[in-house]
Image 1: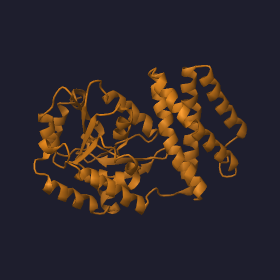
Image 2: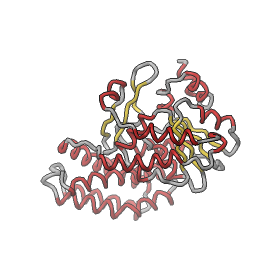
Image 3: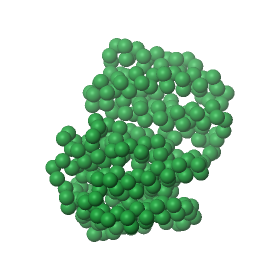
Image 4: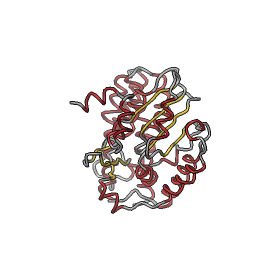
Length: 325
């Protein structure tokens, strides 16, 4: 893969995040937020489409006229303040176009997104975040043993054969990011994220989690980090997001196959490895009106300990109902 193609592929992942955020804001009539994103990304859209047009031999299905028509429609809808049309054009044309480019690159290059240096850098950042127990004294007490243990757990290498035997799978999505499937208590596996537009799915759930007046978000389930990333992106500032994850394999896979190192350093984020759910249990016993408890249901489905599952289901009543169906 040439550097130019890789640049388009990586840039498109970031661009799709922005577009999907803008679409969600448009649909909810939060026009100021949506237009701010659109203004920020227009140069990126033009740069990407120019690069694709210039390499028409590689991107064989791209027509210059169709790209120009698509861009013109977006610009005109914005000028006319037709925000319903603008959201439609972004979703039905621009997103489809970019996902087509991503899928073509994946098909032609047959490449693996894993990069040893990126994995190492991501692990460094995640380890630092896991070992930062500032503000969590009520949960940990003496945290020295925890700090030592998480370093050892995260430093142990990935074993692809072992992960495959246990039911873990990592796959490309149409947007170019990675999704993962993980084993359930029953032995079956489920996907933790969509195979299509990661940012849109994550943004919709993060918007649902966000509640006015809440200053601390207590989250169970990190997955590949996408929903947490989107939650941090929409919170106005000052809130603390505590994320508890019981599966060290998912933290390792997030380090190996996502852009986690780019945002996990956010000072508002607390990340806790909690294999027996002891720490989140203590936190939930201290629950108050300023806290918002957020349970990521796919992660809950993969939680092996029944007692911990029952505890967390109390904060997700609809899940208990559907599991009884």
